[in-house]
Length: 138
Image 1 (cartoon, helix red, strand yellow):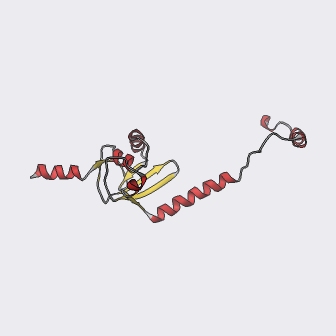
Image 2 (image 1 turned 90 degrees about the vertical axis):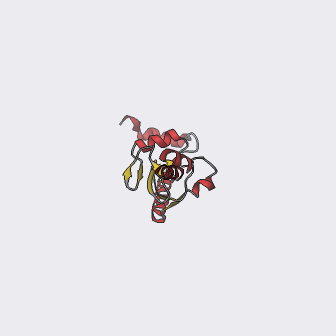
Image 3 (image 1 turned 60 degrees about the vertical axis):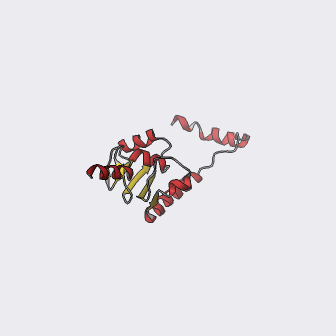
């Protein structure tokens, strides 16, 4: 009977790197594995290996670039499907989601303040630039 329960556990578990790929957090399994080994993925607050089994009900923190996802596993899949199916595999913590969206909005606002010139400077602008001198040599 112990072998049957082991087989049942195997049917109810998926490798962490495969699950992250199937849930569309990373484009490839190799990127998922690299993130796990780099400490960007925490399962129940602890580091994990790529071969670790993911089970329904576990909590994870996934850092992808500047974004931090705090998620609860709702389903398992070892196949990468459409985005709607991938989003059904997890539920994101609402407070963490709001913080992530707020940080993204702040990054967009910081970038929006800079506007590169639309073209070459005209005669008046060139003279002003020359009057200021070569700022790059300072």
